[in-house]
Image (cartoon, rainbow, N blue to C red; front, side, top):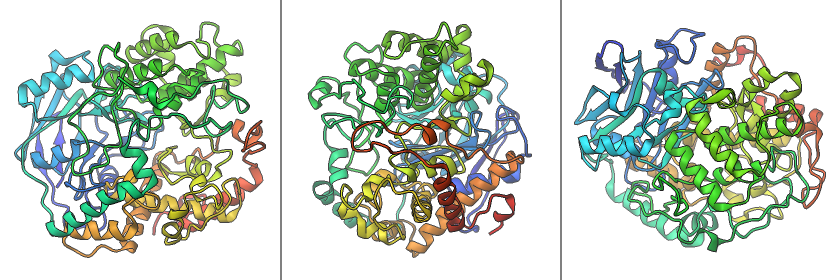
Length: 601
């Protein structure tokens, strides 16, 4: 582990890294390989860049929370390490095919795909797949290699080097953020196909089974797990009120009464798509597939929690079918819904201020549907402009447009508004890979009044005591860093954050027992946090290597200057002085400074 694949020469070798400690075959190992095998300053589309895809030592094991695969490369959007995780069965497919990790270098002479089968990796021509969407590509490759083959594929967006193109696994499970699909496209890599039936072995099957049974019982008693398992599910926004300031409305510009409808649970009736692709070994089935009956391709409608926010309220749209159709189409074309939604929202606000005369208007669902096609194919001047992402588009349009690009490190900020939840804002600004909504648990969950009280003892294990959600002080900085380290540990091991501590059934004790049972060596809470720190340090070291003039760790000005106007979060805004103090405490907790002399730990 891993296989080292050179697409230019076609050579494949296997490198033994088993004697190295602390990488667990996941992101930490990928970062080490990027540091060792690539020169600083490479363009993300240079053939010499390295693409890392891994189930690791835990991903793909038939147990709750162990379904993730990681995709890692230098991001064409941010210029630092771009990491995206895919849920679903692809990690299990990698393990079944005999590969825990692939490190891909070079560029194929023609459009190709990698086949992993029975512990061997081979390169095959994919010329006839050019221009096909994810569903058609997956169908064609399964026709060749069997219906049980697992496929990670790009659509036209990746082929056309859209900077936020995604990789989509097994039709509906996207590794969405930071443009990993464009890295596939730059390497002339259409897909990775895994075929095989070797099970992922575990050291103590009885202990794994007992933990799985305990998890299954918790689906009834844990509120978030129950929400995820039920219908319409975790991502099926329904029925609850839309508090002003909680989520982005019209590009974070509207924090008063939004004037947008929240769907009801009944609105999802007839839109669920039956699949056989749930996460291996996990009973939660939290990433469900939805698409309107009229959608041309329904199987790609895997609905992440950010999809409705990014493609709906963020664009001033509340038509559920329009949002579900846009999400399914984005996944089939291979577009990250967060960056796509953020970029279109930017264009809408620019158009409203006269900076983009031919731009779309907020609420125009038909224009969004057309732009999705144009961006994926880089058709027309507007499609080509928006394919670069909102930060680069703003630089082309001029300084006035910069205010409307809601980005950090040139990556679009997720649609959970950090003004009433400043810990989220610290995570957006300071996580070294770029802004992610699932980098750490949200502040409102630990509010002494409105929070999830059952999770308070678990959070206290890592030093995250309850505090009012909107409180921004040094302790908020320390608490956020501790939560970031915990969830970084989950990412480092390919453990699912949607199954895990502090708010889901896999508590720290259960997590460490599960890892011990799978690997056969004792794994402690200290090991989990050490893995999280190692991943954060590695991501930051790579970022500083690639951005020697300094990292973009500033939130958009709007979040510091425009308070929430109405509702329970009225007045919430990120005071710059308080944010700077919290940032310093955040750095201190992680052992970082503002220079690159802190990364040798």
